[in-house]
Picture 1 (tube, rainbow, N blue to C red):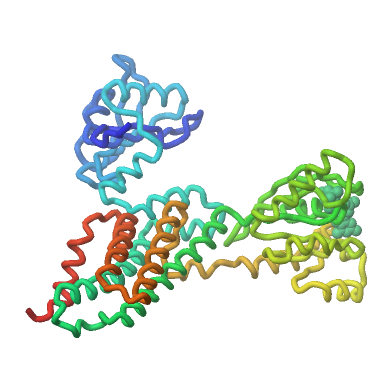
Picture 2: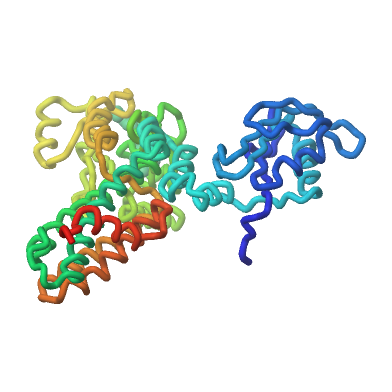
Length: 450
Ligand SMILES: Nc1nc2c(ncn2[C@@H]2O[C@H](COP(=O)(O)OP(=O)(O)OP(=O)(O)O)[C@@H](O)[C@H]2O)c(=O)[nH]1
Ligand SMILES: [Mg+2]
């Protein structure tokens, strides 16, 4: 079904729940007219707050604060009315159904943002950053999402686009004016160097975006080790909560237990697992299989050992993943014993989960995942998997162009791929008319004095 973008849409922007205030939002040409049907006095056609009684037929059902955004000065670029009514479930639903009966259509999920995008108010990355802003689990994710919403990515994408248009223009000029053989920078070698710069930018975008997404969704952290080494105690100590059952019986934890730990700049999604051992207990066996199967999808493994419980076979399975060996129950050992075990691994800290003495581990994690530099990085940071796919496509097209140059193909063939990239960037920026921009650029920068 094709959605009609001329409809006036309505939705509740807050939860429909028992609460102080609910915010009902309408967007579309008829937003004011439809609202006027359920209030005592017509709304003034300006960007102001107005108080109105709301009627169901002749019955007053509420008195609400109403905000109007007109003349394109709104989030969607259309007329918007926001009704801040009292937050009863029945009342909110009633107002929405009245508005629908007077011609509004229930909005589809994300339709307000979609309209903002289609009306050039925000680009795709900004639309996504609204989601991120809402979902942010830690301070840094919040800051980066806010920066993207404000347009940081926009500027970075624009810069990338300028570089791209520059290359396309050079190639286009040398095609259009074949006799004019000294179009500056249009030799195959020079184009290759320019493309390499773009390729590096793209690789950086993908790398930084991957880091941001781990940061935004939380670092999946697996607590893995033999039975009874203190994995559940470590989880409890990290999240300062008695979440997992701890006993001195081997095989206490059978299913996974999850907890979350927020640092300023990142979040750990902690997963305590069943301890690894040979067992005939069917339930425990399933738990152990689950523990092992989680290795692959984790971003970090806390590999817990004790002096007498070092499972090298298990260590082989995780040593190529990002990990730290956690020597637990260290308060029972003397310095020499600790140093001796530390010598067996590159990456190891000694802790005592029982005494909540885990500062060495916390410090290591903080150093590893600080991520503060993401704030300074100038390249766009993408969070939507679809946008990331778009950039992977750009990378493919750039590699293709490079390959074509290496094979000695003519530059017009290379431009086909570059135009494709321009289309992708323009899509992200919410601009569609690519050709005109290139022509513009050619005549501005490479007019050749003709
Ligand atoms: N001395 C000492 N004992 C600890 C420490 N951490 C945990 N323990 C004890 O070790 C025993 C096992 O702890 P758990 O946290 O249940 O161990 P686990 O690795 O989760 O065990 P399973 O769930 O069976 O795999 C309990 O008696 C804990 O109190 C520690 O740092 N020092
Ligand atoms: Mg346990």
